[in-house]
Amino acid sequence: MSAFLRAVRGEFYLLTHRRSVFWLHFGVMLLATLFVAFARIKLGILHGAGGPGPEQTGAWNFWPQFGSGARAGLFLAEIGIVAHLAGGLPREIASGAIRDPLSRRLSRLHFLGARLLVALVLPLTLLAAATLASAASASTFFDAGDIMEDGQVILSIEDDEVAHYLYLSLWHAVGPLMALGVMAVAFGAMFRRGAVALGAGLTLMLAPTLLHETLGDRAPWLFTDLLPALGADSFLERTSRFAAGFNDAFTYDWEESVVGPGWYSPWPAVLLFALMGLFLFRRKAL
Amino acid sequence: MSETLAASISGLHVRLGGRPILKGVDLSVGRGELYGLLGRNGAGKTTAMRCLLGFLPFQQGKVEMFGVSATRLSRLPQAYGIGLDPPGMDDSLTLRQNLEVACIRGGLSRQNHTDSQGRVHRGVDDVLDLVGLAHRQHNRGDRLSHGQGRRAAVARALLGAPELLVLDEPLSGLDPEGVERLLDLFRTLCQDLGVTVILSSHHLREVEHVCDRVGIIEDGETLLEGEVATLLAASGDRLRIEAGQADRVREILSSAAGVVGPPEQRQGGFEVRVQESFDPVATLQKLVDAGAEVSAFERERASLIDVFHQALEKAS
Image (tube, rainbow over all chains, first blue to last red; front, side):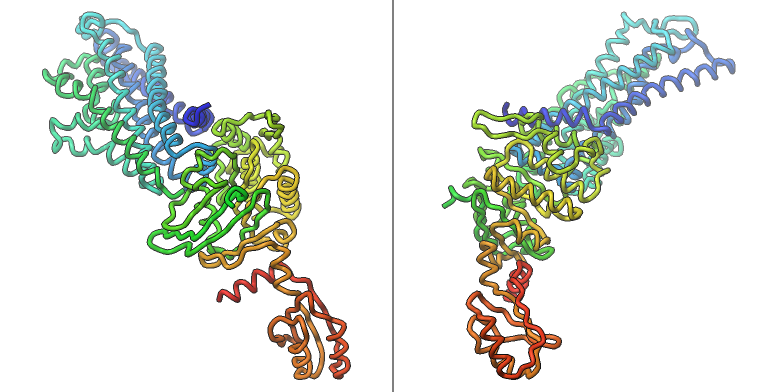
């Protein structure tokens, strides 16, 4: 078996056996489920107090709740990705756990390459966890018909492509989430202290939100701007609002100026951070 | 020369944060040797081991394992096991899982097996038994005591069929039974299987009994290296005499054959180092003849502790 394959198998063993990874997935699913459940409770209370009921407002529908629930789970997923992957390497270096794999005829390149691969996979499993939990919860509490307001269909799931846009926005989240994972590993390779690596990761993650005005039209070129939960230009947030019947969710050129670059902007970042991580780890004192 | 060496370090200089840590370390470990690396805390033992294993970049020197540069150890055909300080257990995994992931990364079977060359490859259960931790295999890394963590690191190093073990203070924090168990294990590995073991330790008495050769590092430099028996012989035994007439005793001891250095006055008597050629009977006779009223005349065998202290004294 090649050295890289051994390293990858080792990383996947850790991914499937570490309790922190299990609890992170559990937390993401729980948050997505609870968010939808609380939305249902809140709508029920409002309806009981004379507010709108089913078929009277878009919020009483599976599709917007599915999108919002998934986004709620992804809040924790994004923070968890940075915390788990940025803090991982410094923690392993401090505890000496990193030395044994490197004494098993694995080069540093193999080891970090395998870790970077996990940084691409972990966001996918967390995205899947959030999506599945949200779908299960939303289908339990809400019906999935057309979007209605005051008894009138305002959005047709098929004709207005509501489901298509929601699925597209989840697919759109893959790139930024993967780039976030690779960035976190690179920061872990850069800094000796896990807290510093985590701080740097969170800072870059929140930078587009904090500097949105300054960055202007260039914001979508920074992949963290497009993160589905914490990104200032979250496609998932827009599609969830659109599915709830807010017809101002998309401005006329938003799709071209934000969603368009979002399909490409994370990948140069993935490459850049991967190369940066490999370069920094190559000669790091362990 | 390098073909007979399992590990060699020559002229090793390391600076960390602009501060010189190693200032000329030279060590050579033959294949199948049990080698003790000695030195005070902060002397540079762990740093030298980290350089040997390719974990620490160095500024100057040559570091090789089985003739392969420390910077290219992933290409080394021989397997080796390590147990440095800290032991490096993943706290979020159980001890057994820690060993299993090491097997996966090393491409090793988790079960015992014998390869085509007749070498026994140890699996997870076997190494746990060898270090006496089978009953702790389902404990997480952070639930192991300090001593158990050390033994766990040794267990992980033993997985497969390593030809070299590099162990940093493997005896630290162990109970006497644990120390004895590990030293027996190291001795057996060396004698029966030809495994080379490099261990650093502050347990000088134990090292003296099991190690073939030792190296002493102080303040980032190698002070002394050699076979334990040779170093002990060169160090000389300690002779302790309690007697009256101090001037006469000093005179007789100074002129006696086989006495190394001047006699040192201690409480109630003298202490002096003597070599194999020293004749105790003749010296005692001379002291008695001189009316020195000898009340104690004891010869203590030289120990590694003496060798260690002498080396440090010389260096200072």
